[in-house]
Image (cartoon, helix red, strand yellow):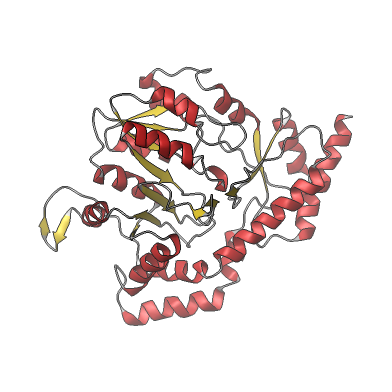
Length: 369
């Protein structure tokens, strides 16, 4: 099968560098909170132009720790998207707050600021936009809304490392931002990892304490915290990958452009669109079609892997039945959940592999005629 993504190829391309880094960690004997973690935090903070970067165990923890550190909890509301991975809303619930969903812009798949405005109440403490599939959300309008209502903006940038909005990278566009380094992400490691970025030094200090059991000083604990630390081996791997992230993102962009060019005449699909003021880094390349199930079966028969992101919107998940949302509450998000299909796209795919995907799609068009 031609896979949707293949992190093994990405890591194999850096095999010798990664091996040297891991051996250095092994010989040094410091496996938690060492020089690689410190360097990773510093390099990413410098890259994004923020004052602080705090490495944590995974992207979900990054969200939970940020919300907790901002004292968001029971009785508070956070406006977010119903069309994302479950962790976006789960983190809000984990700190005891309530996720309030707003519908999306069907062009970018991200939060529609006009719909967000309708959901802001006296209990709203933050807006949590997701830069879905690698395209930045409309941060100018969301930040404007937040300023009007004196609330926070926390970016879920887990799928979008390296994406750019109006000349600035995601991770530097709100009060804080959260990244995931899961193996399939654009910037990734061979396991789990996460990061929070912010220029709020008070927030950063509290996250650093919370992530180490609420401890300001070893064995002295000022509050109940978490155990959420990025280990040295993963930090070392990420430093190797970070040197290549811009090249890899450019490769993703090139494959996306080639899909757009080769598929432009197909009438049964709609290709993704990118706003002019944004750089999309294509964590996923998703097409929209009313014939999704048939197309999936056809592509599978041609040895092409596909994926549905996401088959059920968050507001309709069993875990959120108590919020009393119903099908039809967010029609644009729900329509995408029924139509979107991810095609193979990753930096080290080959032209021959992409041609197989393209030809299979063209063949399906002929079958429909």
